[in-house]
Each structure stands twice: as structure tokens, then as C-alpha cells.
Length: 206
Image (cartoon, rainbow, N blue to C red; front, side, top):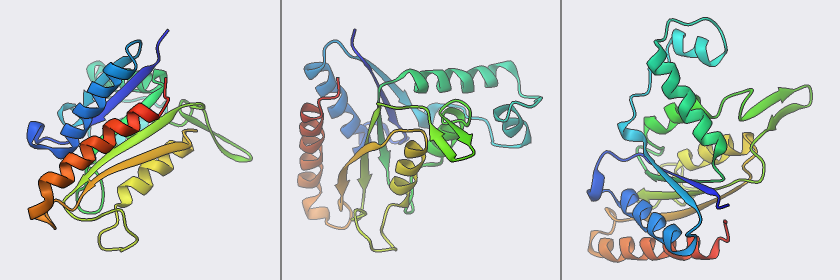
């Protein structure tokens, strides 16, 4: 039986988004290389996540809540889908040194204490072992850098929260510098799409 690849996008720009194009390249290559795999694609920018107010936090902590059944079902369905997947692919734009807010909302709904990880006297323990993740990141500037005014802290955060859940192998493919070097933008995107396909072909995920 094939494994499940969960492909998550977060740009509202549709076909104009470079991260969406990288997601398309990933999906096409998964279909070619891993025909037995199940590919699930979710556009996080289109999901009506609840505000993380008192009621949402109460629900996530297992306390009584006034959230409606439709909202709690959405949160639980996303969590169950995330837990069941074998490979995670996050195709994201780089916004203000971070990733879109929908990605944070998604992580709060899915990467829950008691489900994706647990606390012990020795510290937190990830419960999602033997899984891998790939981040496809599109940035107008060069963000794969230690420069504090360009570095993508969202990648660091995403690697950290996935590691907390037990997902230790997290790779990144970048499309970066399109706005900083507009004369080379088409070549940068073309190379990023090639890099995405090449990574999936060599990843031996499934």
C-alpha cells in the first residue's frame, strides 16, 4: 500500500504564486515517480480557521468550549489528516521574514500536545516518528542567509515545531531573489521548479 503525501500551500495568489508553482511541480513529480502514493493537497489560505481566542484554546486544551460543532469538526479533521500522513510538503511564500498566518493557525489545529507530541518528566517527546517533511519556500529576496534583516525565521520555526512532533528530517528548496534580481526572475523560478522535481525524484520517500 502506498504512503500519503500531504501537500500544503498557503498563498492566496493562485497561479501567480511561485510557491504554488513549486507545489504543482512537486505534485506532478509525485504522480510520476510514486504512482501508488496518495496525494492530498490543501490550500491553507482558503480554510476558515477559527480565531485563537479563549474558546479555541479551551477546546485544544480539552476544556469545555462554546465553539460550534462545525468548527471543532474542521479542527479535528485537519488534525487527523495530518497525523495520518507520511510525508509533509509545505509550499509557502516568505512574508515579512516569516510565513503566512494561516500556517500558524494550521499548526495550532494539527500539531497538538497529546496527539503530535506529549510532555514527560524528561521533556517533550514527539509522537510522529519515521515521517519526513519538505519546505518549498518562495521569496522576493535572498532569505537563505544569516542576515537578520532577510533571514526566514518561519523556516526555523516550522523546522522546530515539526521536530517537536518527532519529524526530524526537514529539507528546504528555495526560490529566492526574484524581486531583488528582476532581470533573472524567470531563470530563478525555472531553476527552483527543476530543483523541486529533482529533490522529489531523489528523496526515496515512498
